Image 1: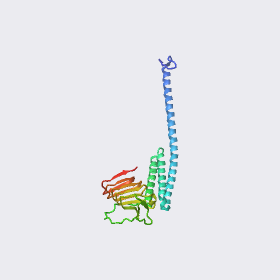
Image 2: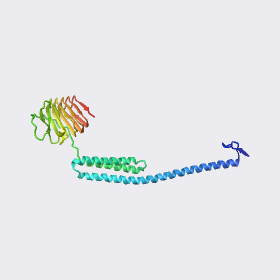
Image 3: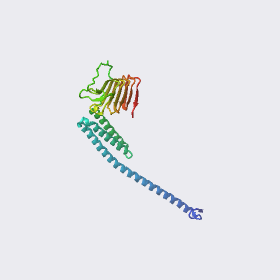
Image 4: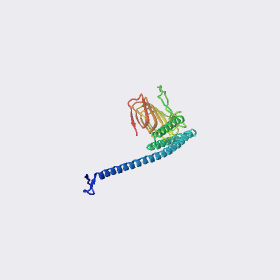
Length: 276
């Protein structure tokens, strides 16, 4: 029997059954060879990638260990740093921890799950240790609302005691700012405009405003904390406050400031303008 097998090169080509069978077998063999070659290349690429990843994992572990040791050394040295330089020291430590965290996140594409978990654990431990050391070496002062007290009568002293900051009101009238043990205090003012200079706040940026009526207070500088008590129909202009702001027993006042946290207690008919 003769079968006609048409090809693109020569449409009139005729193949016998045996020749057709051999052609089909040859084509299948070539296809199997092509598949085997692709599989071999795929396995070679996977093995190469595994080897490269293994080397990267080893390098990654060494770098993480080095960065961890450097951060621990900074934490140990913080115990000997002067108090005025501690804040800068901890800013450097947190920057190093963030750098380690970023490095670990950028390397996750080739790391096995165990290495990723260990890196995250190291970063978390360093963050917790740094936070505890910062709280121990730089404790934050806690403020609470004071108990109600009966106002004491005080005569306003127009003289300027030595060691106090001095500011001007309208009409060139002088008055003094009272500096308490823990807070820089302005109190007992009525219908006055108070402007505080930055040099007056060099020793203490924890400010208290108390017992004032119809006055304007301008403290256009950064503060750590701000407490305002017993104010009536006053306007308070304050720069950014890095810590909390406490408002207690105030009535009909307008406040202009930006702060991290605001607490109000027994306050009526007031407005706060968030300056951001």
